[in-house]
Image (cartoon, rainbow, N blue to C red; front, top):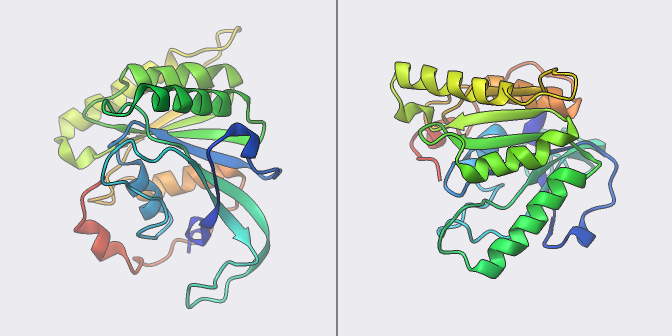
Length: 240
């Protein structure tokens, strides 16, 4: 069982001043509205409704925290896993780029997202969920530009890869890696930016994403589990 399966809701905040005063590693998930961010989080954590996917994209305005570890682990499962201390936090950032959101809300999100990814000390890595069919829109690039100067790892998950044929998927991955490789430090050394293909529908790239997130969070890997109980349900669902 992956340690990501331990994820439980921890807190939600709408202002930077309310960010939790914790000192454990934070892995943040960012992405354009409708890129499949909520679905990716849910399938990685083996839960259907951990991350909330609004019926109206762009309406989720808060930063939502999910804990890995903690005394509450196992309360809602048949297993008896129990970890007294929180080991890491997964951070679900508001989706960005939905046209019908008001101007004031966009400005609020911009401040919230920009300040968080640039200055949050506990943030150890950013996971960007990007639609493989529409890689690196202007807003995606803005997020990379905000984050790159930190020098921290960025992992790009190209979602909905099942919508592409093999050649299209290969090209999308190559283009993403080429784009990310263009970011270098003052000595010309590439930043620790990586990319992969992913499909929640076909479960493509699930193990790769799981292992990468555990690595970035500094969590030891566990033995892979058999197909999870929600696997069949997830295969019948489309990404939101």
